[in-house]
Length: 173
Image (cartoon, rainbow, N blue to C red; front, top):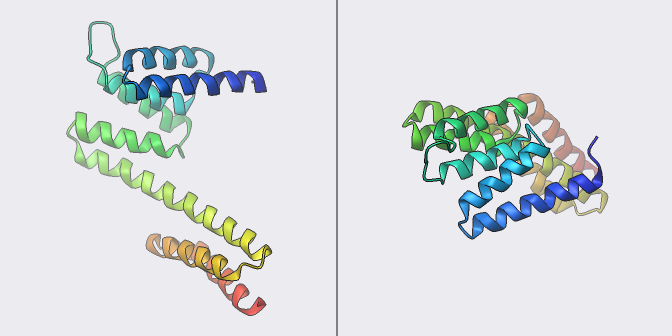
């Protein structure tokens, strides 16, 4: 089990990668990500970072290739099917580097589906917290937005739950 100390180490390592990345020191950032992956193998966030940095490299003999980047992204979505950034980056990899718009669309569609799901959950949670604070108008706005997202995806069960929350709000106050 990882300790809080090792989690802090991961956090510092990621911060270092991001500083190097912002300074356009891509090779050094990639080295740092590889070092982090030795300590935290199969971490989807790190795999996505490595894939992104690999795509920014001028490929030389023995260095990671675009195929390696795609492999990292595919592994990231296998390890965490809800890793939105992995789905997005896999879509871009297929679209930009492989000129495969059809495959890219499937991955972008999955990222959009997951984004909607998480946004709906966050909006409903926020609405419940706002209701507890008797901030009904804000809660209703959150629920209405969540319902709109649900209606777009034809999720009838979830939409019915949201409508019930709206009815409850209207009658409770």
